[in-house]
Length: 108
Image (cartoon, rainbow, N blue to C red):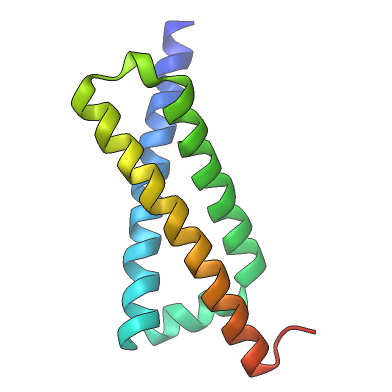
């Protein structure tokens, strides 16, 4: 049982890293025009990537709630703040990307 908890903790940490990398690619591309090829690829595969991002954000948020008592005080605050940042980032990404897809005529 202990080994299973360690594996799930490692998977959540990997998920945090992947979300951070995705956000570090998405936001500079959206706001400053960097990584244009990556941004166009994100928009081409919009529904798949954002479904995966939703699952990752939901997993992190649920993990913070379920394992709240197992974290140290500083780690509680850090994980809660990261979960809120990723959740807020996801919502804003959805709104901006759907608006852009509608403007380009890709949706409908």
